[in-house]
Length: 100
Image 1 (cartoon, rainbow, N blue to C red):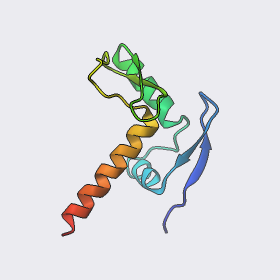
Image 2 (image 1 turned 120 degrees about the horizontal axis):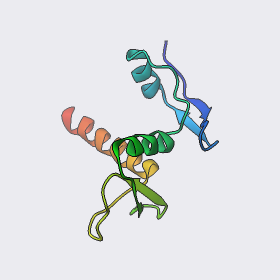
Image 3 (image 1 turned 90 degrees about the vertical axis):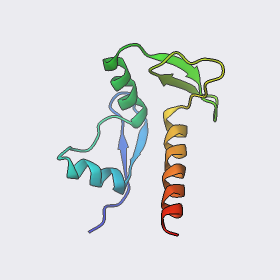
Image 4 (image 1 turned 30 degrees about the horizontal axis):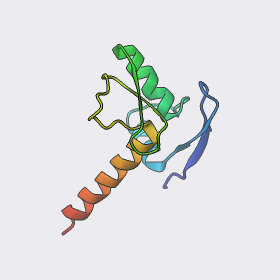
């Protein structure tokens, strides 16, 4: 049985976020329950636990990007949403190259 996309509400910021079938499979495989916070809020919490959090401007959309390093002018930083899209595109490209 394949899972369907679920819309969940973040308990921290109150925004709706998508819980994809891939994420559901990962969470299930590792014995985790459904996430209670969106990716951005989970990432911010991880960064705060790890230490200092820096703010920058997302190179793709212009929103605030929170990162674990001080962003330099020549360093591109991305918000969580844009980084997820870039990572998905990279995974897709690797799969395409690997299936030749």
